Structure formats: structure tokens, C-alpha cells
Image: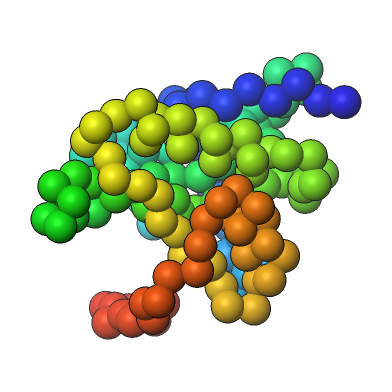
Length: 156
């Protein structure tokens, strides 16, 4: 049994987070990320906190980061508050099925619940990732009626 503690990430977590993001890109989209760009992308929110906040789940006994997620905010004029988006979710394979994501989610959800500034949580999930969708539904999330659309500079 592992002892998982969730906390806001610190700069020292960046190497572990980079490994997880590279693994996630490969696992979910068969992409090989440019590590230099990824490292800049992970580091920048520590210098500019309005961009994003990272949270990590740490196995205290093993002194190992077991999972992570990133949050960003979207202003909602309809709610006069921000919606917190959960992104970059990854749980190390050895820790899957051990409530690591649940602990990360509940940590962020608690922040949202305690603040009048936040209106709720959203995330997007690959349409084929039915396992993750079931986990999110068990946490009380609902399928939205929106389709995700994009225009990007670059290949992904």
C-alpha cells in the first residue's frame, strides 16, 4: 500500500513531470515531443503563475511522483467567475487503479469548492478513452454538449 500525498508542484518536480508528459504523448497520441520545448513549457508557469498551476501526487514512501495534472482558468462572464480546466493528466502505470487520479481530482475540486471565484471544473478527454471517461463520471463529472474544435500553428 502506498501513501499518496497531493501538493502543488515545485520546480524540482519538473524532470518527473517532463517524463510523464513525454510518456503520455507517446501513449495517447503516439507523439514524440521535443524535450527542449516541453521543458520550456513546463517551466514557464513557474515564472508566470497566471498561465497554469501544476499539482503532483507523491508516493511519500518511495519518494516518487506518481501522477500529475495541470490546471488553467477560463473566465465565464455568464457565471462571473473562472472555470478551472484540468489538463495534462497522467498517472504512472505502476500507480494506476490505486486512486491516484481521484486524490489529484479531489484536491483540485476542494480548492474550487472553497472559493467563490470558481464556478466549476472542466476537462477534455480522448473520445476513445472510455476507461478515463468512466473514472471522470464516477467523480461526478458529466458529458458536455460541446464539441472541441481547434486551429493550431504547427503540427499538433
